Image (cartoon, rainbow, N blue to C red; front, top):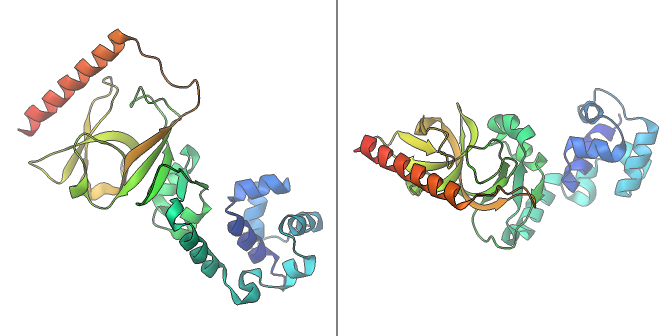
Length: 251
């Protein structure tokens, strides 16, 4: 029996490529990669030849050998070894907008997380980090399309009042907001936008799946919103009014 399907999946993950990226390199549709890996279809000869060239393996090895067990070292063992080697580099998984829906179902699935693209930032050390692409203008002047790199928050009690977080929840999905803690009702968190045109709202702490405190904001050159002095004064004034209103409600 051909082992091409499982070897394709193994080699792809070894490079850290998504199915979409692998398909692009092979010049085929992403759906074909899924069909090959799930053994619903057999790769064409020209596809196998391209893969053998990319990974420097023979066609016989690709078809007949379990490459995940080559030299007695399994794929999972290699992943663990790689993570240990890079432990001090803070590998950051990137969750683009198109992966947001899948992330809600797969955030705790190590195989899903391994599918995400990764990068590193030299200014970060220690902790666990993840990056999320945001859309919309609720957190202006942080523009839509920015990437927020957040550090994992293990529990609600360690949340810093009025700090910015990526909040992943069952009902609201992935949002980037400031969190205002409710001292009277610890079962709720108030999420506040930097853009005063958006009203604050509350989420149940029991609905929150993950929280990541914002550490770095990445956006494209020329994408940053320009603000004049009057706009900034109005923004600060509106934020102060929102905070005062929230304090009155909590008291």
